[in-house]
Length: 177
Image (tube, rainbow, N blue to C red):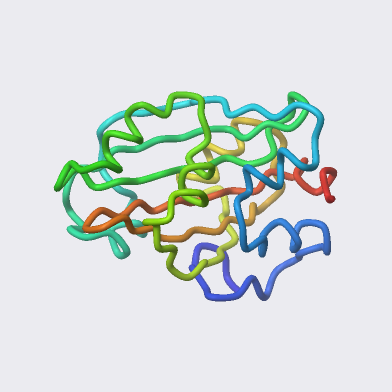
């Protein structure tokens, strides 16, 4: 599989069993991190109004609207293991917009997987290469090879939708569990 194409399965690239287990985790990565490390932390890197990335605009409605962008590092025992990038359209400010604004260094995953109103769409997978903006941001947190695996899914709460992309850093494989 060429890098930079979103797919419904993580196929066509080097993927060891430990990483595959994380990549295909059906539940909350926050909960899995908490189970597999002694000290878990969400480090807020960015929260601001901006534009969705080109490939995100294909999933979000309306696609050209300004968006709230939130980026965090999920850390296990002080080591960044996942870079998470969240995009929420600013159109129709509802509960989700207010919740996102107040999250700070708290986990969005804890909210998405515990609130009964959220509906999660299909998970998509992709190998990111250095040309992709999310590869560049994730690689700034730690060592990265030629590519990084990522996954994304669209979560809906009423009329609002949030696209969550998670980029897996090499250190995640050492927290197998």
